[in-house]
Amino acid sequence: MTTFWLRGNVSVNVAYDDRTPFGSPTTSRPEHSVRRLYAPLIAYAETHGLGALSAAAPRLLADVVDSDAFREIAEVGSDGSWSLREHVRFPDPRLSRPRQLTFACEDRVDGEGFVRLRLPDGHWPLAHAVIADLSNGGLAEHSLTSLHPDMQKLVTGLAEQDLLGLEPPGRPDPDLDASDLTFCGHNTVVVRGDEAQVLVDPWMPARLARYPDDYQPMQLADLGRIDAVLLTHSHPDHLDPASLLRLPTDTPVIVPVVERETLLASDMAARLGELGFTTVIALPWGASWQVGDVTVTALPFVGEQPTDTLQLHPEIRNAGNTYLVRTSRCSAVFLADSGKDDRGDVRDVALRARLELGPADVVFSGYRGWSTYPFQLLFSSVARFLLFIPPALWGCRMELMTGLTGALDVAERWGASVLVPYADGGAPWHWRVGLGPRLDEDAQETRGFDPFPERLVEVAHERSSLPDGSSTSSGVAVRLLRPGDSLTSVRAHPRTLRLPGHRWPWRDRVPEGSVPEINDTGQSWS
Image (cartoon, rainbow, N blue to C red; front, top):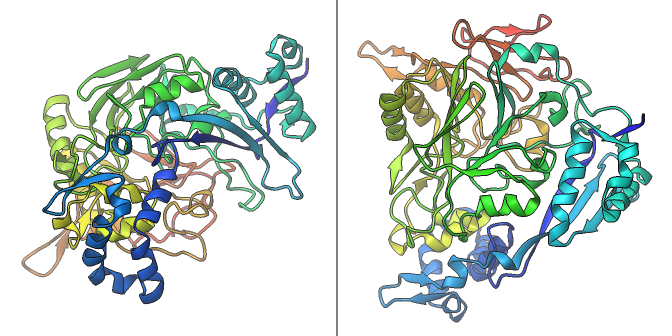
């Protein structure tokens, strides 16, 4: 019997047709709209440099708010503050729909290895089922005749472009059965219990020839059965439709509660439903959900809002969940890009949760800090945040995410024994698209924005100054995981497992005396 799989070097992309007047949270159109609106600041930076823009920004921002173009999207008060019009705050979700599906092999040239098609609304569940089959158990040739005619054409087109193979794109390594936690990179982690395993924020890029032969992105087929997916929030590096389409349509997906789609947050339950998922659970803060021996508890997502304090339209938020996941083997917390805002501080959330739910073994925390002035948002992936920052804060630096010291604060308040820095890239397939610092032989970091994860090790070893001039370290062990690494025996004696095909090929920059144990073929961190 012939069975087809989607090749591991084939990427999938989902594009939305955004016809909203200003922009939908499902696309980057709001960023384009905001940059047109604030064009005088961009022009000033191009002429005088970003450094000079810092001093001029409050005046230029005031000029923009006083413009006719700004008054088309907001009602401006006599004090210079404003109220965004409803169509900006609440884009009509019916005007932004998934429309285009693209399959491509970047290793090929001259337009080969490329399939693109437009799908009407009702066809997305059909395409989802086909992609999931091609990514997991395979699609048997004899079953093609049972597919919708348009899906038969899709499979035929993929075969003609040599995007299908006769072998699965990956197989779970037997050693993974012993792993408690597997870090796939950026925000993506697999949590394994004895009876079930869940996948957090899947972003699964394709394998490419440009990456080292023995270090390639993990594929869904490498991970084994996935019993549920947890999504923290709707930013595209956390909610990636292309990665999610590779999962069976009946996979339970846990998402935050979103009462109404806004400029800052997609209605994740509705958006996943239109892609064909049949079991989407909007889990409110404090509620729990269980599959097998895995219990998931949703906790508050604070931080990564337009400001770290008061903002205009406080009801419009980057809605999200953080999660505590307990299994029969260990417990882990996933904080994504959280930090501090007018509704709370992730450190306080940690302490309250520990007192109510008990300590966690491992904390996965972002560590970027994202210290920024408002005008800098204009040049980021969330330029739309600028619309929600009151004039009183235009000249104030803010920290929108947890930083290096804050990550340790959170882990200590959780009573964790291990802290894993994450949510900032980690491998070539991340930094080539602007996620995180470069970590290979041409390593580059931006202190205060995209620091090396090793900085967290340094901070942990010099946690607090003592009167005699020395310093004391944190009681929490910082464990650096590279994409593809797993943690085993978390509660007894945490060890890092590196599998063939996922062994870090570059030098690690870990301070002397802080080398964790590696369980592989003799490799260790220098």
